[in-house]
Every structure is written in structure tokens, then in C-alpha cells.
Length: 137
Image (cartoon, rainbow, N blue to C red; front, side, top):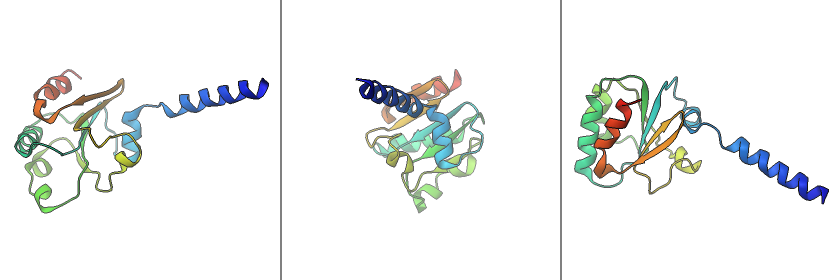
């Protein structure tokens, strides 16, 4: 009986220790320096036109209180994207898909907004609601 109690207590502590602040965990894994309010993670699978529009609007976004992470390889198409040259928000590439390997990002996830109080998911086709949410942070 005592061993069973110790086992359950240990499992509880392990669970408690593994449920930390995901925003800080993303920053730690990708070595992002000081993402003060939010980290936006984009897994660019889906509508290419929608992605291009999203990247264009992000490049014009006038806040620097966060960071943008794109889970993709650094290829010519990515380097020519205006987001990398014009964005006031720092942009990072997760080329090795570390966030997927760590289980923070699922392959079905499209857009994730990591904040101090949790994570919100968005669809690429409905990215406009993302800007409303970031504007309220």
C-alpha cells in the first residue's frame, strides 16, 4: 500500500513538473531571447495563398513584443519572403522541427499562439482572428 502511495505521489510530481509555461519552453528549445508577450508558431501546411497573405500582414505588423517561429526548412522561397526582411518582430526557423519532436507542436497544428496564460490554435484559412488576439495582448 505504501509503495502504491509513493508511486502515485511521484507520478503527480512528474506531471506537475512537466506542465510548465509552454511559451518559455518554446523559447528555451529554439534559443529565442526575451519573447516578452507571445510566440507565434506557424506550421506552413495548407493554403499557399493564405500563407502568403499571412506572411505579408505579419511583415507589416507594428509590434515587437513577441517572436515568430516558422516550422520549415530555410529554402529560397522562405528567404525571399518579405516577412524575413521587413518584419519588426524577430523571425526564427525551426528547421529541425524540434517543437514537433518535443511534442509541443503537432503535425496537424497550423498556427499556435503561445502566451503566458496558455496556447491558442488558429487555422490558416482564418488567420484574421489571430491579429485581433495579438492586438489584445
